[in-house]
Amino acid sequence: MAGMTKEEGIEQVFGGGGHVVILGAGASIASTLRNPERHGKLLPSMDNFIELVGLSDLTGILFFIRHG
Image (cartoon, rainbow, N blue to C red; front, side):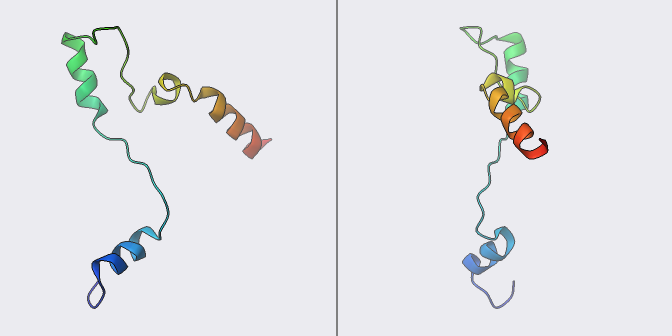
């Protein structure tokens, strides 16, 4: 990255595309084992994220569109 600005370096690595990062669910879920959420709601993890946030129908549609 010598000879370029920080912004140019970021653009070179990321290419200007969008991205989503989900971090930290493990510690939150572990903490609810002893102290469950007050209203009985489950916290999402990478194993159950799609189901808990209600995206199951969308992922099924996208799979069908892609694979016929």
